[in-house]
Image 1 (tube, rainbow, N blue to C red):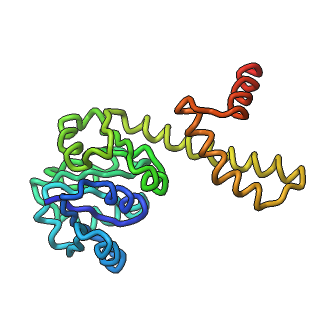
Image 2 (image 1 turned 120 degrees about the vertical axis):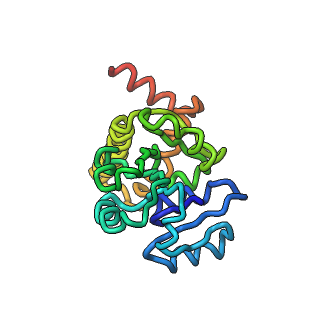
Length: 224
């Protein structure tokens, strides 16, 4: 049995893309959130924490700040057969392993994504650290065809997620500052941030830019 612990935005987005015939067992302190999700997605089942002991595969989606407390206080729930897949980008295998019983193995599986965008796109990318390469096939079977699975060091995933997040925020802040100086209405600025920036990024990556975009690329290329 596979169990998901934690049911925040990332967990919900991942669950929405899992194979349709795969039952999903979820433990979360917010039981009502899981029950509500199960009404829309019958493959979701809320389980009690005691059932964790019966699970071979556990996927940990708790926020980083809650993980140490949970693992330390519930280590007796894990069996010698448990494999713990953790998704917290900022925590390393060494961090997680120190809070687990010696016989339980931690498997770094990080998602290179943003939760809302993952659900919207309907596909994603997950990176298994090379130190856990032997679990790649199991990860692939669990996540299914909506996810591409790659081998990548967890520190690389951290660097990518941090840099992309920062630069995305910087792009919006810069846009707002420049257009506010021109006394442009907030409604126009906000909509540009919501639609033009992500739309241009998708078009650029797909080599499908329109006239404005192609001109911008030339200007940027000439400047560099």
